[in-house]
Each structure stands twice: as structure tokens, then as C-alpha cells.
Amino acid sequence: MASSIQHPDHTNWSCLPCIGKEESQPGGNRSTLTSNQRNTSSDGQAVMQHCVGEDLQETPEMLQKSLADFEQAIQKERNAVYEMALNQNREYVEDPTFRLKFLRANVHNVGKSVRQMLSFLQYKAKYFGKDKVAREITLDDLNEEDKRLLWSGLYHIQEERDRTGRTIIHWFGSLLGRFRAENVIRVTYIVWINIMLPDPVVQMKGLASVYHNTSRTGEEFVMPGMDFVLTVTNVTNSFPIRYSVMHFCLQSGEGNLVLNNSLLGSVLTDLPLYTKVRSRIHVGSIIELQYELRSHGIPMDTFPVDINGNIRENVLNAWLYKYQREQGEGNKLSPHTGDGNEPRLAEGNKIIPAAWNQQLLLLDNTQSLDHMWPVVAGENNNLQLPLAAAPTPFAQALSVKPTENDVLLGRGRFTQSWPGNIKFREYLENQSEDYDKVPRKDRQKRAIELTHELIANGVRFFEQNAAGVWEEAEFTTSMKKVSQLFRSIRKKK
Image (tube, rainbow, N blue to C red; front, side):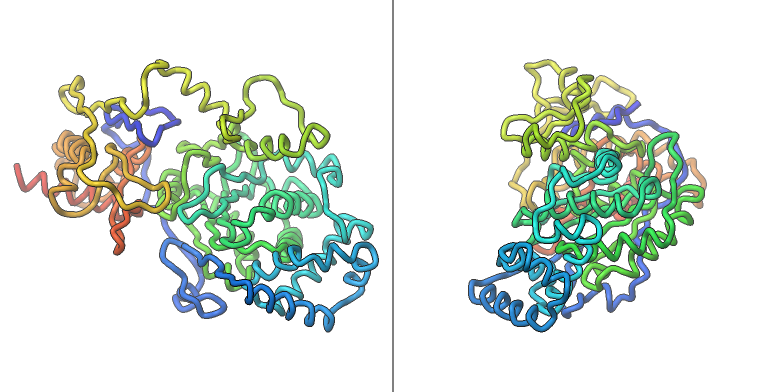
């Protein structure tokens, strides 16, 4: 049986079972937006493939003009809460770095930026108190219920960034209905404004957001009311954060899709058009969902859900432990349990979850993962192939690079001789006799099952884009490759 924790460079082909575990269909990618909306943003800019949003391009002259226009606009629209903030702390609301966050969140649309800032101050006074409208909010401003929510796992910030360098924030809908709207708003403020927004990369690139309908084993999905959803959405829309892409991941299953329809419908309706056209709804099994996200540049190393659909508790709050350390002992919110389950910081302040520490301890200290040889499934289970060096270097997008256990799609001697492709053909040759016995109408289903098994055991499928960069292929493309190779094997018999 395959392990639930797979190293991306260590695919054990002998672990691949011969029989599919469950019936499924390829992961869907649905949206209610029109094709015209999906292809353009609110300012007419094209939306790039794979949800790659545009980085802001700024010049000193542009910043100076935007800030000057902002000052003129705020003088015309200033209201009671702005006057309150001026009286409390003029430097806070007139600070160019504070105003610039709103300008960047709205792609330097001055009118929208001013209105968003005024809404931000209004909601800040309502949920934290009028005396705090012109000062920084700290962890000490959270009450006990807020702190429980903060540590509940509602949010997860991945250690890695996505393919384009954006911060990735995950959120779990199953926890929303367990708390009051005001708790969610205050916790979201801390996570968005205090933790993510100070990063200049977040301001320039925006966020990649991933919604999950996954819940912990034995926990019931508590659906929040419509008033709750509208309140939280309206308040968080005032936060100066730009969403470059939002992925809504819905695991297929009895009741799951129906349960989330009203929630997602309300959220999508209230999103700004800039974000709405960059939203994707994915429906499928957990393996299909993860594969779809990987094809959109979301890495899996500290992804909060494993391939069995279970929440990875040892990964979930790693970002919060790191933030807690950076804030110092005085702001500690939750004591360490001392049971070894807390993430630890490695050299360079990089978080390594405890689950990985235990996994790596099982390896011989002298053995490198990069030199482990995968076993090829077949009649001779002792057959082992050493990993060969790549004939040519890969063009790649950031850290996305095929390994010698992955499958490369395309024609030519290079892909045919790639070690992962060789093992892929040998694996399917061993499956071909059983595959040919399957009725023709059921062969697509069998190809889907085998693609599931390959992905579950760490195999990835890559194809080159127009620029020659290797990118992970979508699930349907990978499944078609499986079917195609079976047909080729049949013709050679």
C-alpha cells in the first residue's frame, strides 16, 4: 500500500496496485462566469492561462501621482470615521505606506482605493472599537473565542509560494459555521493585515486563495447562515488585499456540492469583478483536485490536505507558530503541547512539519533521497533502474521541474528515453492484458482509475507550453495519455 506521504522525487512504482480503489470522473473546472468575463478583467486586461495574474508595474512618477490624487479624493469624501481617525492619530491615516496598500489592492484606481479605506476604518471601529481606529491591531486585541478560532485551522498559509511567486492562503468552510461572524472578521484581520499584507510581494502580486469543503474526520460540516456569509464577505472586501486567483475545491460526494452551493454562490456574487474572473471552481476526488491545483502552480509540500482527504494537522498551523515566534514570548497565544507535534524551524527559519521529521528519521542517515532507485512493477519485482541524468536542462517556471520519475508528454526521442516514461510504459505493459479484457465502454473508467493510482504514488505528468517551459498537465490530459499508450501497446502485440 502506498504511503500517504510521498517525496516528490521518490516515486515507488512497485506500490502501484493493479485494481482501482474507487469509481470517479475527471476533476471538473466549473464557473458561472461568461467566457467574455473570464477572459478579461475589470480594466480590460487579459487573464492569463493557469490563473497567472498580473504583477503591478510601478514607477516613482506613478506612485507620486496616485498618492497626490488620493489626497485630493479623500478631502472630498472624508466622513465621520475619517475625522475620528485624524483626531486620534493623523500620521496613521496620512501615512503614504498605509494609503499605498489600498492603491495597490485596487490596481491604482484612486476612487475605489479611497472608498475601500473609508470602509476599512468604519469596520475597524465597529469590530475592534472606536478607540482603535487609528492604531495597529495586535494579538492582544483578540478575545478568547477569537484565539480559539485562530488556532482552529480555519486558515493555512503555505510555506511555499505558487508558480508565479504568490503567497497561498487556504481556508476551510467546515469551520465557518462554528463561530460568530465577528470572530471570523477579527481573526481574518490579523491573518490578512498583520501577517500577509506587510509582505511587499503580497501587495505587488496579490494572493492565491484556496477554499476547501474538507472537514476533520468525525466532524459535521456546520453550514453558516446567509447573513453570516454576507457580513463576513462585505467586511473582508474592505481589506486592502488583491486576490489574483481563487480556487474553490469541492470534493465530490453525497451532499457536499449541494451543501456548498449557497455559500459559494453568495461569496462569488459579492466578489469584485477583478477577482471573480480569476476564480475557478474545481469538482472531483481529492486526488483530482490536488492534481488540478498542481497544474495551476500550487505546490504540495505543505498543502494542508493529504491524498486521502485528511487534514494534515502537523502542517496546518506551522505558519502561526512561525508568526508567534517572530512576535516574541509576550504575544504567545497557545502553549506548546510538548508531544512532538509542533512544526519546528530549520536553518534559515524555514518550517519543517513534525510529520516530515518523523518520516525522514526512518531513512538511513547516509542515504540521499535523490539517489534512491524506484522499483518497476512487473513479473520481476526485483528489477531496478538507476536514475539517469537528464540529456538537456529543463526550462522551468520557478521551482516546477520534472524529475526522473515523472512522465513527459510529447513526441520525440527525448521524451521516449526519459526514465519516467520508460517506467510508465513498462507499468502499462504489465497492465495491458487486464485492460484489454475490460469492455470497450468501461475502458475510459479504467484509464481514470490507473491515472488516479499513478498520481497517488507521486507520478506527475508534464507538457511543454509555447515558451518551452515544462508545466504539469491537467488530469484529463494525463488520463488521455494513459489511454493512448494502451492503444499503442495493443497495436504492437
